[in-house]
Amino acid sequence: FHRSRLDPEPDWLQFLEALATDAAIAIDNAALFDDLQHANTELSLAYDATLEGWGRALELRDEETEGHTRRVTEMTQRLARAMRPRAYATKGLLIPAPQPGDTFYILLSGQVKVMLIGEDGREVMLTLIRGGDFFGETSLVDDEPSPATVIAMEDSQLLLLHRDDFRRWLAELPGVSFGLLRALCTRLRDADSKIGGLILLDVPGRVARLFLRLADENDG
View 1 (tube, rainbow, N blue to C red):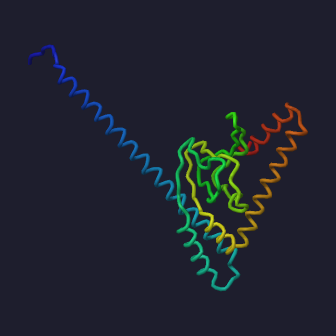
View 2 (view 1 turned 45 degrees about the vertical axis):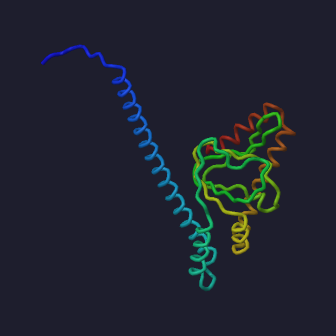
View 3 (view 1 turned 90 degrees about the horizontal axis):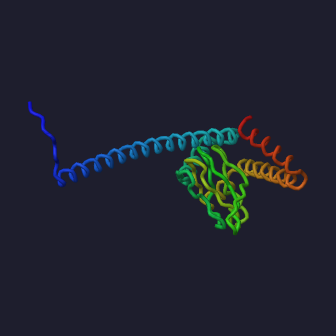
């Protein structure tokens, strides 16, 4: 066995460098493919769980109606066909302002923020929306463009429902319409509370109130 110093030629070094680069790209692509498969699996499971939950809710509301099982099944199938799953990465733009609203959003997982952006670039956050909540309904009701911008705070999975399907859904399910009105009333009451705090409280009071609200939103 004989050892000798290796003095590779430039062509040999370039070949090794190209080989290492290709190997790194292949590893990155494999990792990206695994991440995409994982995300797609989670989205499919969340989608199926949402449809199952809605199907149960619809059946409970309609259990005293003749032929309710068949009606619930048909309505759930139509709703499933109308919905489109969508994934947004962190800092992804969901709704730019001002934009005519034509979509109802259901947040399955993740977190998004609703904010106003001034002409000078300053941002004012209106609210945080977490998994299980919805948004985008206001523009579908009053046909006005959304004044707020919505951005994903983290990787988020959503279901999207077009305006026409949303309105048809409300017309066929009065109970859902009432639930939507209750949610809107809650949000309006929260907005009134925030406005009152800005007007009536001093700076320390506003800060204390903000901390209490954040603690409530995060379960203490």
